[in-house]
Length: 536
Ligand code: N01
Image 1 (cartoon, rainbow, N blue to C red):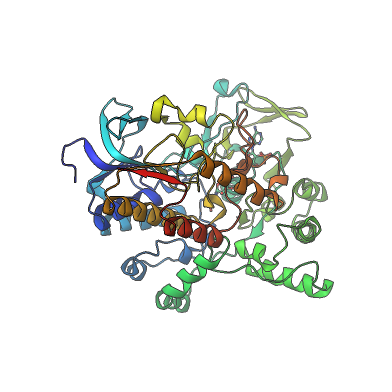
Image 2: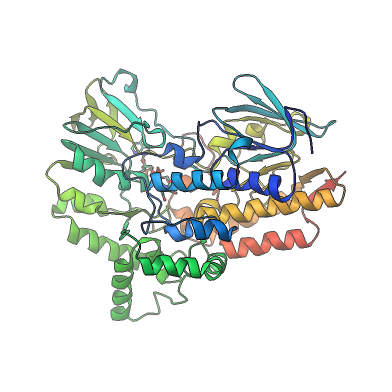
């Protein structure tokens, strides 16, 4: 164990779900000296920053937990089917205190740069304040959706009202009472925020570029019976999540929508709509693989929206879909479409009438100017690579990560990058990550990294780096797997990097499923970490 003040065995960047568990594993399981550097003044990562109205997790609460500790599972109790942001933040603080993690986290400390010294086999990280720290291992736990994307719309600097990005929401909250609010973006975030802001604001105008699918969440308090079921069946729930494609506590049904007779198919869609949430996507096995199969889900959702939304013109704008259902991350909602029946809500189609500029008093589109007191950007993130590339990372022989990823991110297993020895990327591009219930993806990565470091230490090894061959073959597999599905057909998706101008178009997450990925990683470990060069 390294004892000098600024030297550690491992440095972890980020104190969200992944960083906290990684610290616990390295410090308490392996006995290493480890330190987290976190830019915020508290734990939580994405849950620390995303405080927008309606912020709630789309995974069911009983699955949105660490499953490595029975004690944590028994002591914590979720209150609703989907946890609200403050509850998730309370949970992460509970874990950090329970595991005594806070003393090894340096808050309010942003890492600006990290560089690898080949001779010393050491990573040096530098904070924005200029302080430096060193470690053998560098582990990024920076989150996939943490670098906010604010579109470059001319005129924003001259806007006289207030504007906000949902991912950097003021901690004191925002009171929209009596205000005319404009909201740009209809992804999961915009869809969650819309009904809540509409209840408060005098007027809410939603600027929609791409009509989005959404399925009712059917949120509500958890029954005492369900809470007892969760506590009694932790092993079964864990096993089910590990077996499932997306790390959720339910499996994708083995039934084909195309082979199901029409009446039965309709009944199954209706039943799934009543159950709600991400379970809707799991009722047929072919929805993400076959365009005709997918079209049946599209038609069903379209008909539901048209029944909810009273104004036919608004309903038309909301259902003029241009991509397959679930090819982009499918939002789930509470009263999203119902909100368009309110007198104080207006929908503007900015694909037909593009935003021209932001003026002093509002947003100007081709059909006219919308007067606004506040603008909410629910415009998403520079996903998966933004936060990593926000740190100036230099590897072996002066290789800069930005240059290495000029044509898009390339990793082995989403965990390691050629040219960057001893650097691990938790839920990095090329891993199931955002296509999975995140805590399940995170636990698997953290445990795999921990086992790898333990293996190195017990074999007297101190340096690992993946090979070009392993990387090329994995990247090819990630692309092939994506192309077997309909997901790349949503050409404006952040999965492809298409939401950020100039970002290379590469399908970033691994679509092959959590269960398959898990098995693959286990085999790599079993074969003495095939695809890595290990040395002392
Ligand atoms: O961001 P998004 P998000 N002019 O990128 C629009 C996770 N999440 O924050 O589709 C006009 O999905 C853009 O339009 P288009 C979840 O994984 C999780 O909503 O590019 N519009 C789109 O409508 C999710 O997928 C939870 O045409 C512009 C929207 O902004 C991910 O976070 C809750 C524009 C951005 O949608 C990101 O979701 C919420 C412009 N210039 C989110 N630029 C939970 O489970 C962008 N848009 C808790």
